[in-house]
Amino acid sequence: MTIRTRFAPSPTGYLHLGGVRTALFNWLYARRHNGEYVLRIEDTDQQRSSSEFTEDILSNLSWLGMEADTGPVFQSSRLKRYSEIVQQLLDLDLAYYCYCSRERLDAIRKEQIQNKQKPRYDGFCRSRKGKVAAGSNPVVRFKNPLDGSVRFEDLVHGPIEIMNSELDDLVLARSDGSPTYNLCVVVDDSDHSITHVIRGDDHLSNTPRQINLFMSLGMPLPKYAHIPLIHGKDGKRLSKRHGAMSARQYRKDGFLAKALMNYLVRLGWSSGDQELFSIEEMIELFSLTSVQQSPAVFDPDKLLWVNHQHLKQISGSEILDELALHFRSKGIRPDGKPELDELFDIQKDRCKTLVEICDTSTYFYADISHYEENSAKKNFNHDGMKILQNLKFKFEQVDDWSAQQIKSAINSVSSEMGLKFGQVAPTLRLAVTGKAISPSIDITLELLGVEKTMHRIDQAIEYIADTI
Image 1 (cartoon, one colour):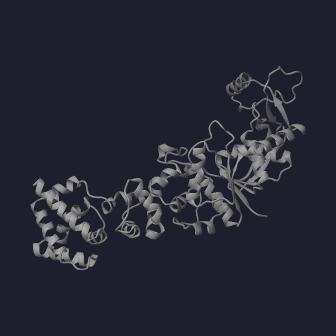
Image 2 (image 1 turned 90 degrees about the horizontal axis):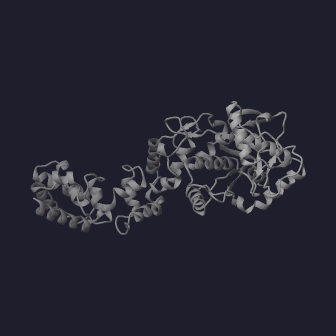
Image 3 (image 1 turned 30 degrees about the vertical axis):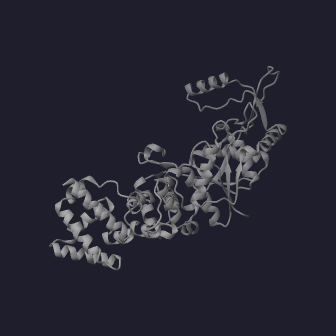
């Protein structure tokens, strides 16, 4: 038997972290067992679904590297199939038309709540006889079994049993003929031979209803695994107020795809005390038996730490295109020197995201328009001008523009002026970067090149002369 899993997002919003983790667990489980992973777009809600959200889902799953073996399959293209199943259930007397008005249903619900009863349809139309008013637009309801129970072995929570008396006759088709979620899911999972349904705990209440539908239709049952939801530190379900953002925003903010996947796989799953995983390790080690039952807690700081660890483990050649995109999004063309791979390799230990690398490296590719105010007040004075003039003279004598020779020249100026290296470097750093912080100054100057360095020293000397 080929294991087949599926991720079935609804394109009614941007792909969020919970959705990414659900996709990841399904993708990993399929890959771990040499199975197949299906992507299904549940877009039957035409009013709320949009092509923008569909494109967001597809592009971000592609960015994350979770390409589907089958799909995307759009539910909107399968409406005829759903209608056939509804008619089949009606013909088998496993479903019926319900003509109850919204007013009647609301009244029943209100009364049940007042009586501290579980709100559920009372089955009024299940055995209804007689004529129906002309112009009525009924819904179609499933005849849920009245007796017995639904039992299944959840691969995360263990054995679960729900009495059928707790379940009502769910709607299969709305009054306009459109199919409902539970019907579409069952039909799709059966038609696509899904063997394992891995989804969030919030779907647990749907499972017994869907199992009864499967059984009524004589369709093989998939196995179920309901994974814990993600909560904020306050114990409430994850939302924007906890600092969580859509996948597209994390991508825009310079997080690595594999770092985001690494962090999310650890939300509800573990392999000993290991925190950092490659994609290959995730596939090799992932199992549903190691998924915890309690909610996982989202920690933005931990995600940032994981991203930094992954940044430090890769080389600039692996990230060139993505890093270039971040620079261009800020209106900076990273052309010429330094090469982006060289820049990345000197900044990755200092910066936690690709955006931070861009923000702290703009001076390599763009002219300096201003100097950090506090640093300028401290370093751009008569002494600072003398330091820069002496450095300029010494740099003009360097015949091999390398970090080693640059550092030697700075040491020489420091010695001749009776200063320490740490008293000279801040003025030089401010002059050539406009900032108080940069990578090692000798490496920074090597990457800048001699022409930019000399030009910026002249620019700083002129600035000091105009301000003191």
